[in-house]
Length: 342
Image (tube, rainbow, N blue to C red; front, side, top):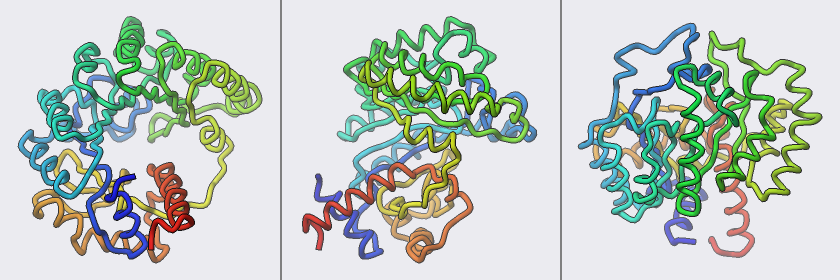
């Protein structure tokens, strides 16, 4: 464990940052080539579609490279590249990837994969690819991605095989009324290509509610689908998040863990806003000064202190960093029990 990692936890205990975030998540574009049926930004039946101006936004290369240099100076160790759209629509995406890897940082890219040259990705050395698939067959893939032909699904599968043993692929499987019948097949698909599989109950922005899981589908998943998926995963050696997925299905509301986002994570939006976490809580802007100043600013710290006092924000009820926070709490508890921290 790095000294910087210990410093972040010391900062959490002192309620004052001592070094930069471990991970910085940079959104590079809102442009997307797909129309996933339940997408908050591009779903075809949305009650309130995004504006054309919003959809055309993408980060300026100079801004990306400046932010990258600045976060490295604070001790950041991992970059996540994604967007409100598909990052591989950005004409400078390869230069972004090369720049991150040239600095020796770990890199995760969140993508739908349809614009990827997987042979080139293998050469670029991306550490992790979060691949949004939402299917285990060509038929379901097309149902969820109406503007794509069935051949796209097979190309994604072949691409994952290309990356096997080079890049850690995590297949993200959104489960709703269209995809619920393929949970076991999704585990089998992950085994076939050497990937991890992550399930989540799909969000349903207004206008897409007709894609929701039915009561019957939910009951069948709990009684049959999940037990079969667990058995298959164990047999095939597939890593998964089925326990967390089951809690989602059952509507189990866990106590919110302590928030470590203000010490471990930050997000930069396509328009330069700096978010406290993936919930888009504004904490500054890249034009306010170097990232180190934004990170330590009174505005940013006000969010930290609100959370330290037990306060919350509306988005905390759907915490996107829940797993990070649970893991961080376990790490902190272990450090304290071992006397690794004062």
